[in-house]
Image: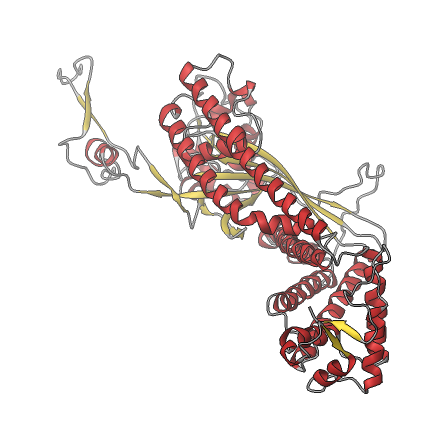
Length: 616
């Protein structure tokens, strides 16, 4: 470039974060629709809105009119003044539908008369599946427009003062005068505007420099209108980092919710995203490896079940396979997201290269989309975590000492469902009673959503009324209603739930106390490991096969005894996929289990003779 502007540093940048883009404002809009009923009659018949133009006179019948207070001095008659409107005076908005287009009539330094009066189509994008209209702004003036007749400037020369209540001669407002004002065509004559006397500059300075106290008189909102249902003001903050550390990108925004009644509620939100540390990748790959091992273990269980080496668990095995696949896909999804690189930085670079508003907003929307993707990722991870916790509870059933929780829950689940139905019916009845009696006077009972939410808060143990919601003593009827709600929820429902849990716990504890096969957990683990090693080395049938033989083929055993001999086990196992190699192997198998003892030294088998193994 010829003679580029080179900026010399005056001092170091004082902040750790950078705002590389100007603030951006976007909004969701409802759809304006034709009015019905009295509003339509008022617009079309009484006000003749949209029916009259200066070039086409309209019918006087039904039009609004008023009479002059004094006779006309020239004609000596009382004049009648007829009033009509270019647009509908009363406008109706359907808040259930979203607007698909928006003509923005806001001010900008070089806005034309048509852009300020007819509007220009605002750029739009989709955030969270909803259409929004956005705009980058440097000042709130970019969201407003001058009020017609309040921003007068000289028509043909500069330097004159046009402010004040009495407008001097030769001053006019370009918006009021219309396209004929010389300011609108000023840009065509460069000699008049190039660093010289500019009508546009005077008009702009008069609009920009107005004090805030005069805004209601000289400015009006054009971006925020009645159709706006949600307005978001946001700034993108980037925190750079050295090599090897993630860059933080944040969207700091304030969301203004605008209700149909005009109530505005503000909510500050900060959305941050960054790359992950190297340790995350190590943990992710380790997790992926663990789930892969467990997946192949599940496949091995299927293979063994198909060959008859182990029983087929038709309930847990499909669940294990499914949860393994979901977990591996979930972790792989996270690894892929990390391998995609810094998408936001790439969008920055592309936006600066193209220098278009759409690409600049793509930086903001990409942070929003990444945050939504992370929310989905975390939501799926939470669901997987719940499934894994439930699977862990099922694993606790492998030993009586650890199965108390799962057994109590399984016993009480059926009764829980009955109590849940009763509680839901009570909550519905109490909510209907509260909304019917106090919906017009008490906060929190005005609609079904607030009423049920208030009842659920009581069920969770919260207070049904707070000091900030009421400064006076409630009426007697409301006090009786509160007493009924508290008595029903706390003293009835909760006591029933507690009784169900206590009864289930007592039953499970009695089963464990009556069990004759319970051993120390560590002793059971060591025995399981040793028996597994012996089964592999000595090629014994698996415990599942032996158990199935004793349960299903017990009729083939010698009914004269209550035990199975090594010869009988050897004979029964010949028809399985993993038989004993010899009679001696079957005898060694019997001796191994005959030597197993409880913690107190008592033998595990009822008949501890090394030649027998109990079948019952």
